[in-house]
Amino acid sequence: MKTITVMELQEGMEIGEPVEAQGSVLYDAGTKIDLKVIDRIKRHGVMCITVMEKADYATTHYEKIQYDKDFQNFCSVYRNSLNIYKGTMISYMGTKQSIDPSVFMSIYESVSSIISTEGQLLDYLYNMVPNEDELTYTSSFNAALLCGAFANWLNLPADEKKILILCGFYYDIGKWVIPNNILWKPGKLTEEEFALVKKHPVTGYALVRNDTNLNEHVKNTVIMHHERYDGTGYPYHMREEKIDKYARYMAIIDTYIAMASPRSFRSAFTPLQIIGILEEEKEKYDLQILLPLIEKIADTQIGSKVELSDKSVWEVIMIQKNKYSRPMLKGNNGMILDLSSRPDLKIVRMV
Image (tube, rainbow, N blue to C red; front, side):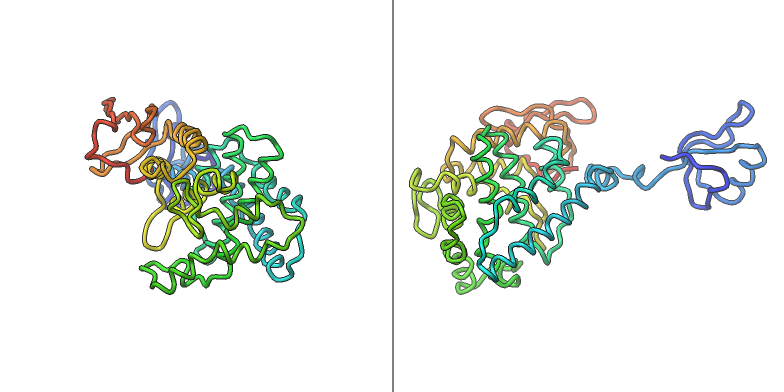
């Protein structure tokens, strides 16, 4: 709500707080303003009144956050930084000239410096409206931002955090040469199209392997980020510690990014939905990395509101150890629901 002078009143506005004059209420909150209302307010000598703003009509978290000044500032800085990153990488692919890591760290710091917590970053990224023409760039950019957040959660030393962030900026470079109509095709890929997409780790490695200034862990991550701890990944079906440690980090981050990003054929998965999928497929990842991250992500969801498959809305009040995707919930009527005891119900979206 905002307070304005009577001279600024316009038809169609809605009164936010009761309008009083000479000890009596002229109009209650919620009254729609028309010319008669404006004339009566003026005749009673009222100077200022409070009216509703667009943000006051927002009901869901997504709607409310769009009017949040901090979120709006984040979106502005994010888009400017994304454009710099995009231009830098396109130039790199064209010239093959090595880029000083400080360039990427400066891009990272420009965005991360305005984030107060790792949970806030997850929330902001989830509630942004992506540009479908730039999904390839935003996926890599978001991955680099999450690399920094996850490194903080894992208490990585500064030098290891820097390497992981650089992995995020470079790891999916092989996808940048795949046409968008194939890469983001809403329907099922043909065998030929799927084979082309699966080549992107090798294609990407060919782009970075001769860069003598690029850390070897970053190069390894480019070619290994789709390898899986149980040997079910590609391109070489590597297992366990044979996979570079940073590629094991990126396997988790890449999976999170893929599911947290909306597509033309589906909405973004919520963090708790993503955790549920990671729990089901935990054998594919290094558990020493995965489990601490799952716990941290789950903890950020306390206080959020979710809609279940039966259309009911609940607040997340407690995370349950060893079943992080099935929290304790509280309804508007004070009822408590243990989601771990209700396999028939699923979280479908955040509200």
